[in-house]
Structure formats: C-alpha cells, structure tokens
Image (cartoon, rainbow, N blue to C red):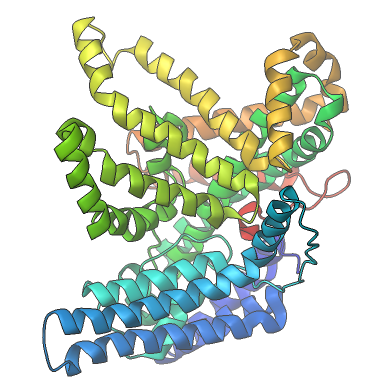
Length: 516
C-alpha cells in the first residue's frame, strides 16, 4: 500500500496524539499499541499477522533463555550450550522468515543462472511473496533483544505489552532507527503526558524533516529516475550529474525522514537514537559509516563484527598466521574476516540484488585498505611533515570522499550491476561538460527547481555545520524574541507548503528506505 507523509501529518499523528493524551495514563500504553497496529494494518493489511507472530515469538524466546539460566542444574558448559541452542533457534526463525520473504527468489534465480553456465536446463519460476512493511527493521530489533538476553546484558521482559510496543512503535516501523530494548522499552510503556515543550520541539524538527524530504529530495526524484533509466542515451557528464543528484536525494530523504521519526518519538517523550551525524563531514569511508545509518552500523558492529572476530575458529586462524607471518599480519586476520561478514550482511540487508551486494563489497575493500594503510600513511605524513589536520589535507580528504560516496551510490541506485559499470564507464570515457549545460532543461528539472535545490542544500549544510559544532539550534532559536522566532518558523512552514514538490507536475514519492 502507498504511504504518504502528508497523510501521516494531516490525519494519523494528530488523531493519535489527541486520543493518547485524553486517555488515563495507565491505559496509554494500550492506546499506543492500538495505534501501532492500526498504522501497520493501514500500510500492510492482513500482513500484520507477521508482526503479531514476531512479537509473541520474541517474547517467549526471551523467557525461554531466562528459564534455561534459572533451571540449569550444572553451571558452565552445559548451561552455555543450552542457551546457545535457544539463541540459534530464535535467530534462525527470525532470519528464516526474512530470508524466505525477501531473498528466496533472488537465490533461486541465482542457482538457475549458475546451472545455466554448466548448460543445465533449469528454469526458475519466481514465487510471489507478500512482504510486510518494515520487516528488515523489526527483525534486527528482535535479534538484538534475544541476543542481549542471551548475553545477560538485558533481563528478559515478562510483560508482553512492552515487547509489543518495542517492536511495533509506529514512527519507527518503516525506516527505523533500529533501537535496542534498553533504549526505548520502558519509555514506550511509561505513558507520559505530552508536554508543550515536547510538542513544540517535536513539530519544529518535523518541519525541518519535511523541508529536506519534500522540498529537496522529492524535487530530485524525476531527474534521478530519468538519468538512471535512460543512461544509454546520455553523456557521461549528465550521468554524473544524475548520480550526484541521487546522493543528495537519498541523504535528504533518509535523514529528513529520520528527523520526522525521531521528532514523533520526542512528542511522546521517547528518545529515539540518532541515525545521522553530518556524514559528508567524514574524512574516510570508516568515519562515513560511523555517521551514516548509525543504528544499522552499531547493530552490525555489536552483533556481527564482535561475534565473528571473537569466535574460536577465527582466533585460532589468527594464531596460526602469527606463527608463520608475525604479529603485523595476524592482527588484521580477525578484523578483516569480521569486516567481510559485516559488509556482506550490510549489502544483503538492503535488498536482494547484486547491486547491493557489490555495494557492500565496495565498502569492505575501501575500509580494509584504510585499515592496512593507516599506519604507513601516518608514518609517511610524519616523515614528510604533512599536517593531516591542515585545511589543505582536509580539502583533499573531502574531494576523495566526494568520489567514494558518489561511486558507491551509483551502484546502490543502478537497476543492475551491469548498468552500474556501464554508467561508470560512460562517466570516465565520455564526459563532456557542454552536454550537461545543454541538456539541463531535458532532465525533468527547470531553473526554478535547480535554484530551490541549491538553496536548500546550502541551508542544510549551514545547519549541519552548526550541529557539528554541537550547537543546539532549537534551543538557541527558543531564546529569540517572540516576533522573530515565530516569523522564522512560519517562514519554514510556508517554505514546505509553497516549495514542496507535490501537486501538478510532480509525482508523489514514497519513502526510499521503506522498501529495504
């Protein structure tokens, strides 16, 4: 089902807020849960049963893990094995459902393609699965909860309602952020009253998110689609322009939606984790991914990277490498294997397409190179008296990251892996800037659109710079005199209404990450 932000703000969120505030505090968790399931049903229909099953399953796996710990007769290895079996079962079912619904056809077609190479006649007929919205997000939340209970960092929750609220909180269901139970479980259940302060700051951030999503990102949608769908007939400069537009679109779309989601939680008194921290200020690929989709990165770090790097087979392999090649080589064995696991999962998590897998391997190679070259580069900089904090060096890093990020997003957005390489090839071998200047009018974008996008990017860059300096912008604006303060916010609201890419001439653009 199509889902549109304006419907959310014009109807659903205000109605939920009114009902939530009117009911007695002890009933607010139930009211919120009903809103969660109503929202899920509106966008996924009867597939809400997946959410219901996932909630009950997660709840009882947690209790099972706790019960194994309490009833085990012998501490030590027997206990660990019992708990591990329960954990593996819980993760296997969670990933099994996700795997079948999202990846079954992909792997089935891949098998058919491999067999065709050996001249085996096998035609795979895709199976049409109905995939519930948000399954990639809430599946990771399920895994984080049961893993934390297994590790003993989280007590098993006996209240099913709390688990239900945690997995189904309606602002987060489509695009995250990916929360841990310890971060939001109790806050969702607290049923706090909606305060004027939270309402004010929440809607201010919502307006900011709408500005990024509707004014900038949605305005670029037609241009990006045109370039990626018709690249064979376009010059390399036009393709490069489309790729940069997509990078801007994706960031404004996803970060704007995160502003809206986190602000919605703030109104309810729920502090959701931040998912972006000025990613384009990153100095290298590793830092970029510490700033972009932060909750996904921390999930992979805590539950995959450490699990792989600390596994006995990996440690034993590192030990053997150390005996033969020395410590300088062996110290990279565990982190590299774990890094490969992380980026394989990252690519697959985004979708069943070779473009996403390549995207994951692209960043795996880049970060691996950064890891093994960091020490030599540092020594070289010292030898040549290069100040790595100087403005010149920072400029070099910024230019490097501009190319790294945009090449990655080219493959991320490309319809197929072959298309991605073909587009990159045209950019490198058939680049004529005059072609771009001559064809701007045919790229589904007029001068007014270009001006609005350019001004919007500048505004977002200024705000990002202030955030990088840890300036609390909303709190600072709240100190302004009332006429100026209200004038600024009314101008922001009018900018969204007047400049938003909707209505005649524009297509309604659905949320990009809701499809992952």
